Image (cartoon, rainbow, N blue to C red; front, side, top):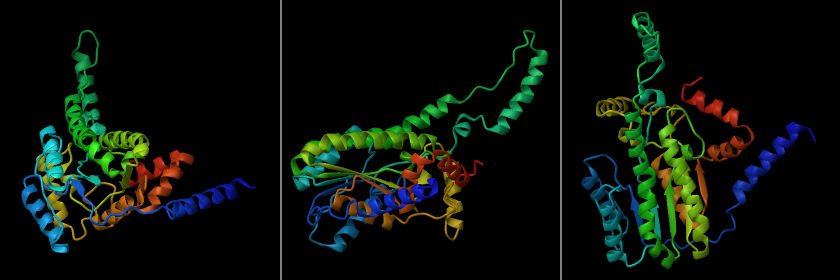
Length: 325
């Protein structure tokens, strides 16, 4: 068999397997189940209004359902405990925990450290002048802003990793008792890295690794862990980026408002974005059928396997998408 024929056959078989692997699973009952969702609102300063709106929308769909809301910083342990206590007080048991709260980073490491190429050139020119005046001949260079990177990294790890790990830990006894399920909304950046997403990828790789391992540990209790990894979603997540200054976030918001489609507001999203509704359908489906890993849209699931065979090709495509060629 020729090598090209082998790869075509292998890829075709993989696609067929991916399409059929969950076809014969018995679905969970999701009707009249108790669900906790974190990150149900977005926009700093608007949490109360948005959560109230979300609650009213839920009640308008079915007046018999019970909806409670908790407003607070999900990284705060006291808030996490309140989410648990209020949930158990209202529902006695929890069947599904959806970990949806998150943030992003959108700058390259060079930008965060303030050592972009143009700055390096200026530093080199300055250094040459300094060298002429320096008696010992040593060259002076501008220091990297490591404090800036550490600050951004700490924020994104707290929100994207530490908070969901801690919150899920509080809920584990209840989920074990109900044989429930954890649905983790992660990102394709937690499987395949990309330029300008170094900090974001670090937090999502950690998130995926933890909950992948937890899934295996919880399987003996019939508690499932589903990890959802979407590509770029049409939300305002970028406005909460940990490595943007407030003025930069405002400029992004203005740019999005002036754009009819808003397709260019996020670096690398020129090919389009997923709708939140589409993601929600996949989340519900994952909860219903205990899917282990969901990569959406489907082409990204193929890219995971493609990355195993041709990692440099996937790197090339990522660099092309984000303008790093």
